[in-house]
Length: 292
Image 1 (spheres, rainbow, N blue to C red):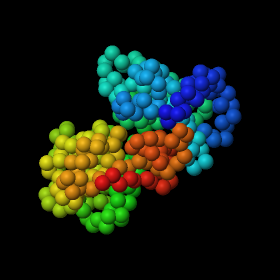
Image 2 (cartoon, one colour):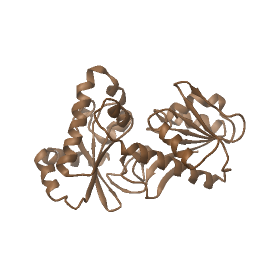
Image 3 (cartoon, rainbow, N blue to C red):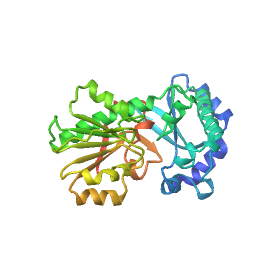
């Protein structure tokens, strides 16, 4: 992405304006632009991939990419503030303006939907700044399918216990519900809010849908040899966490998302596909990367 920063500086100067989005909308009657997606950097390293230093810390919604899935286009925008800023009371109005801006762009373009990365869907829904979260259900379905892919790859028993870290959270509850729908037995919920249903013995799959990929670090002392961690959280586990998992002889997989074209291509944890939260469907091939 870094080598295209100059290009997106020019594009934002020229076309990141209401008149241009209105014009695009006039040519979008057939729905070739399907969705609008808003992302944000998980940390400073991610931020440097998508913006020059003087942009980091700014709330302005900026054009940062284009995604193509099943013949339809998603226009990607970003803001360059870190996650903790969304929860601060003094930023309440900034969050509201951001959500309104994304909705206005969606309306001008005549896109069918809009989606948000990370904790934004749950937070915006809770604050009644949006009334739909399509990315949540899509993500949950992708997680369930990813678990089946990993089971087949490593030859794991269908009846192996599944632990859902963050299982009472915004995404976690939906993942648990999807497993119930497919009648998956032996599902255990682990969450900071009063749940600690860790199974005894046997090889387990631990799905991390908590706030970030390093949440698994809090449970290293109860992991056993050959346990399998499947991470969906953004960003993925750090090298330190991966080294500890390797020492414990545990496997680890990361759900990248689905197979689709992105310009510029995603980097780091999402290279080779597009994240679950940016997808408007889940019929494409799911991409799961083995980390250890």
